[in-house]
Length: 117
Length: 114
Image (cartoon, rainbow over all chains, first blue to last red; front, side):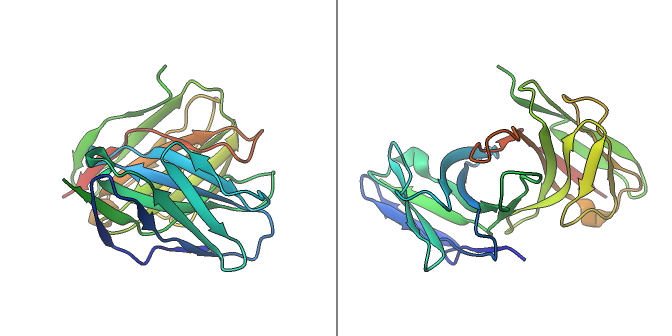
């Protein structure tokens, strides 16, 4: 069974500093995808970044980057130059392997990030 | 550009009542799914569908029914609501063509069962 572990229930970061949110995963699939979502206090789920298991380079999207270490089964989210609007809950999620069938996501329990001025 | 639309946004039910949570998407996505989010937890998959007429169970299906008669709509039915079903419910959709495409989520339905 797939499992996502986020060991940091809460994190604080100073505005303009970088922060790393940890995510480790467990799967027996060779092909899988890793996603990060942001959930602000308003409740919606906002997609941030994606990393495929066969992608050789770490994914980047603006101020977000993913530190993907396949052998260690970790996919940490790095947010550079934190902004007050980054304060939110962050979820790591994994999609089951292959290009067919399910797109079901397994979610971690989340990390609440608070950016301080 | 509606994306995924969920209705209602809030609902209070009494134990034993039934109701249907509506979900519609306008992106012609084959895959649709329902998740529930409980305090301190991530989202957990209830049911999913890979196309009209095809549904399957997720991690926590008990107490919920789904059907998919069109590509656009994927309603979630609670036949006899229980307090344990108090949660925030999210509907999501994605294309089956590219596996790297993210799931698009609706804004959620906050459901309280008294």
